[in-house]
Every structure is written in C-alpha cells, then in structure tokens.
Length: 86
Image (cartoon, rainbow, N blue to C red; front, side, top):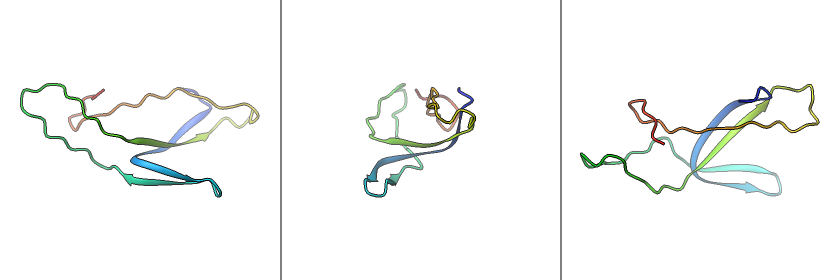
C-alpha cells in the first residue's frame, strides 16, 4: 500500500446520499452485523446483498500536495472464526 495515504475508518451500509449543495454525505442503514442460516453440509453459498463501503483516507505525504495521492485497496470479509469469506 502507498505511503501517501492512511486509512482512517470504513463503514458498511445499505446506501448513502450526497447533498449536492453542501457536499455532505449521509450514510443510511449502517450494517453492523450479517447473519445467515446455512443448512448443514451446504458448503459455500452465495448471498445477494446490496451494500456500500464508505471509507475515509488521510493524506500523510504533504510534501507534494499538487499531485494526486493513490493507493490500491483490497477488502476481505472475515467470518466469526477468522476465516476469509471471499
């Protein structure tokens, strides 16, 4: 990951809205838990669940403020046992 930016926080929600006059972001229906009943012996399943991931990043390299700060991001979903789900 680039040393020009630092992750501050992320939040998972069903949707969000931007007020185009003030540029304020409203995060709607925050998701704090996902629960699914998986029949025993089913193995892998697929759940169609629309969601948005909103993140705040902070620029830490302020020496060259005129250039864009970019980084690659990977998101992993982890189950309660610590196993990656994707």
